[in-house]
Image 1 (cartoon, one colour):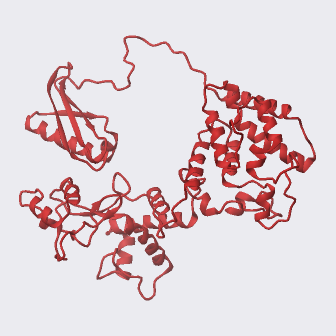
Image 2 (cartoon, rainbow, N blue to C red):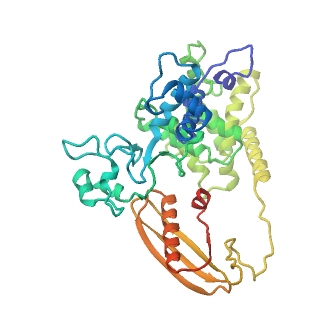
Image 3 (tube, rainbow, N blue to C red):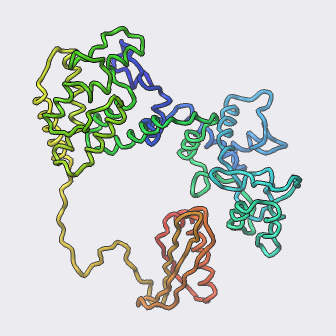
Length: 472
């Protein structure tokens, strides 16, 4: 894959300026978002492990259970003395799956308090114990009162206050505990979430980034927001990644080459010099009427790049000027290559005007023209219209509100007949919910419980809680 990306000619071997590991990082982390083949393969194998875990009656599950884990369960079984290649591959996927699994509490009878992971924080974990001695055989069901509520006194005796709050916010019921995947809303494992997890939670903790590296990543994130062609955005990313074949970068790869700048024939050719501090580049900036720093461009590529990115967002500049900046940088690079490869040199004015013309044409083609539409004033501008139920029936609309896991969530419902007349309505606040989906389910359960107390014969329930409705 690396050879394909950097090498367009089969008979020549090109320089790999950026490692494959760096390019596989997400764009938010400074990479290009390519899939790492090894991690992607493991995330797909974890899908097979998930099926064996959750569909024990399938032919595949029964086959492997009879061969490899007759007397134990799938998550704790070993490799066996003579494992097949397929079984070793599935265990490789299980390794990833086990890191993101946690117990979803129902009645608590199948979950060990101190051994199983059933607390979801930034990652699934076991609860923190504030006592020196504890019972390893303690089940979560031992923390639940016969009335079906948490035993608050016992929780405060065993766990620190932060964990007590998290546990008391868990919904419990008369169902068996089950394993769920922590990194999807619905709790089922997906290849996409598995790859995201393994890419963002490596076994080896990465080296902390320096302030300069972090600043460079922030600049790369801004590059993808620049209004320009895809190839120019890629060029700007390569500028910040040091992936241009200028003289000083070629020297770092052991190539003995003249370090003199091809544009000004004075200083050492670096990426920063070529684009910003070179006399020829600055003349192009002047001809394009692009402002420069009061003290001139510095020797820091990141500082200079941040300056021109700020200019692109500075609306005090004329639109054609600020919009042309990416094309100016791109044409400086092309002009340097034309001198080196073809011996063709142009004036700064010609380069600046060509860059502006290219930018103007691109914006003319890619600017959306607003479509004028005539609307009937009697129609609602919103798509969220209320539709009445059938004659003789009633309809309940409900809504849930959630901001973050540390604040109370809320819900409201309103019951109307087929004329639109309000019959009943209510609103309530719920305990802190870990995510929006949990808040939506709590709202639905509360609304249905309230409606059942009204003893209505038939009720149509409608909601825009898309995630909860899809899960149901």
